[in-house]
Image (cartoon, rainbow over all chains, first blue to last red; front, side, top):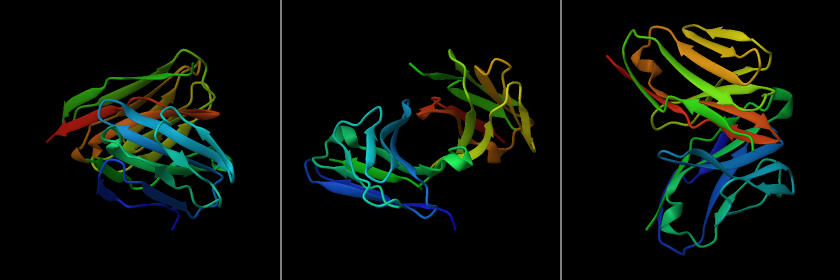
Length: 113
Length: 108
């Protein structure tokens, strides 16, 4: 089954404690991205990757890091989480040959206290 | 810069009423996609429009792309409670640009 899998789905953490949200897709998509969704602000892109070893900043990259060492994986790293990073995070992937239809993961609810 | 404006932000309808959400851009769009996000869920692809004046239908949903390719709409005929969710448009030009979404609530 074609899917984007992200973990953890739910996490409560403390300020400053590094965490990684993993993302994996099984569709051989070259394009992957991370979004955060906040009430009243909609979906905002954090980082995206056009292919392996090719990452770029989205609209709200501050406080986040990503890596793309393999085509299927695109982890999101919060080196020193702060309460303003409490949000719902979505990983997504897409393929040019499919018109860049976006496949979203199920989301990760992150709370930083 | 590239922007897609979406209205309305919220819509409350009685079951059986129609619903429409609109996306507008100041620049010509090469394509536009529509997604639905159920409460507590993740966005799911509905359709993509690429041609000027294109109209596509999916059961009670009708999608339109304007003649000038600067606007698009999603119309739901005779809403049902299963239509509840947020609908948003997405435009792709080197990166993805998201409309802010229209949250639809349907009262039974």
